[in-house]
Length: 317
Image 1: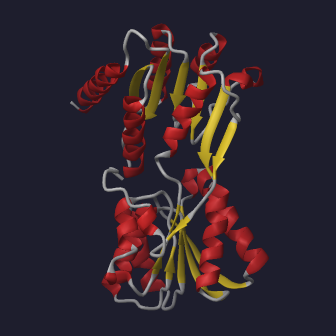
Image 2: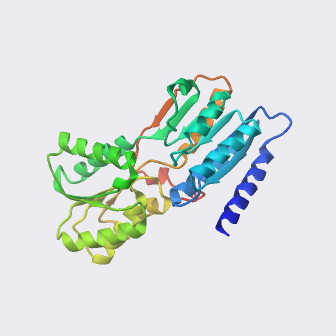
Image 3: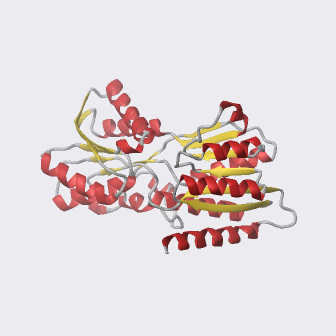
């Protein structure tokens, strides 16, 4: 039933997006993304759909997949449809051969967040738009150090299984602390997940283990939502700062919640709306514009002082 619903959704999206096509369509594109397994992923799909629906002069097909085999099949499908560009969020390894077949036919590939590892000879037709994972960690370290006055005990909630996303954010954080705040003490690095359930569970355990924590360096908004729940339920008032990342609207609203007035709740932007830039990159290339092959969107720290600029009631995430 789940697979049927997924295929039905893909068909409905594809049919609805055909409404943007007309006799004067100038470009045919495909948008590929993984199925929604996290609120952030749902946000990506939302912004992708909104963008192609609003764009003029394109015929767009949007498809989702649950594994590399499905995404490979969809790349082949888009090749057969004669698309000029494929906008892809390649969360699966194993799609490289299909991607190279598309590139052989002169199809532009605009990668979102991650890049497909293809032969260097295809570099001219490969583009990537991503957030600044290292910058998220670096600016998170700066934020914590500034709010603590340069000294304090910090608990780290990381996710090694997230690969370079985790590694880059952690390296940025560690580099800032080492270079600028030697009196900040990292008391533990807890391996968690980017879910509020694990954030709640792991923070609850940490609060039992550590009787004093000044700040929490968390890599993800969902983790931080769970961590804040644990802090509130435990009645702890020693924690003054918590970071996050991703752009979750629920988390943004918590920054203004009086229940957390004693904590500097913050997030480093890594917004799902970056998919808009990825689509626009492909369209710009198709329109003959000169575009950088790699675009890194810089990090902004959001907290109670500027969160009003980031609230979007229409966003699903």
